[in-house]
Length: 185
Image 1 (cartoon, one colour):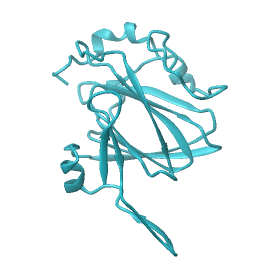
Image 2 (image 1 turned 135 degrees about the vertical axis):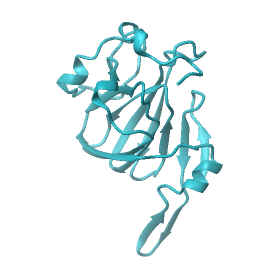
Image 3 (image 1 turned 90 degrees about the horizontal axis):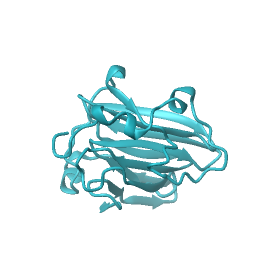
């Protein structure tokens, strides 16, 4: 297994060892000791699974008060996975990074606490599974507009399909008072 940093500090890309033979393949999608050695020391308590169609954009989401780090992987299709640093006072506040994840490349993206998360579906469909370090609390969720001009995320889709809920998320500047401080997440 190889763990490499993404363009933003603390966002990590996991490239697991995949073993192929005449039957197919085998890999460990998570093994606590190996991930800890790679810099992912989080304890995961909840797994989520979604299926989406081509051009879907989900996000941008984070949870405050009971923050969640996420370990994201794709089991069908391909996505552009996006993490945005929303830690007030961070030297990379408001910057984003994108990682291409697919069922074929087996890569995973570790999105740390203090980052908003979203993804765009590049294949006809995509199934995404992600582990979370805390349970989901709807009252603690903060959404940020996926198309916030201040973030200028380049989503690689032609005609984004966005849920009504995600379409109504405020701009980053409108949720500043709810965001964690850098170093205090």
